[in-house]
Image (tube, rainbow, N blue to C red):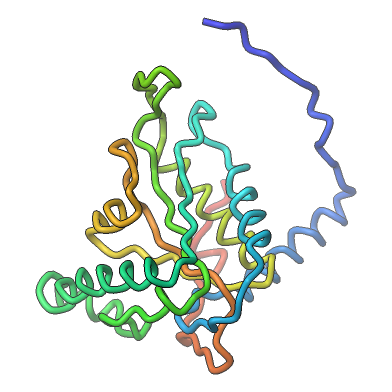
Length: 222
């Protein structure tokens, strides 16, 4: 086992308490504007914006720093269309056969359905894969730890980065999602977690009239 190597925490910035409150409140106010969007424009988006958002996601903490995620960015129209067709096939089975009445009732306020036009309308799709284990340069298995938690944190940062850049997205999770692994030719050690269309909202985009729980409902201070 190699000895751990440490470097100075030179990039940390401390702010006066009043500034900390202001910065935290400003970030919250900005994130309150964020909405999951299903109506996209086909306006082109600079690839560099997507690259920087993915790099921001890669700063997420992860179990033993194994960084057990991979991002596949799709802009090819034909491939996006195939992803949409496969996803809608899965959704058809879900809505017509698998979903309980309770589940459908829970989804009703969101206005979701079988059709997923955002999958080929948005200029980019970011498919996020979790790596159940890694592979060394010699092809040997390398264990990963807290994979679900690590990938979830990275996806959260990715959503925030996309919003900060001035674009919109939607964390879309069809189930099952095996078609995505096949269409994108991903290795055996990866499983798909989420598909995120990314772009500008359509000019006539709408979002459900829903709210968020209060601080008292989501937090307990002891």
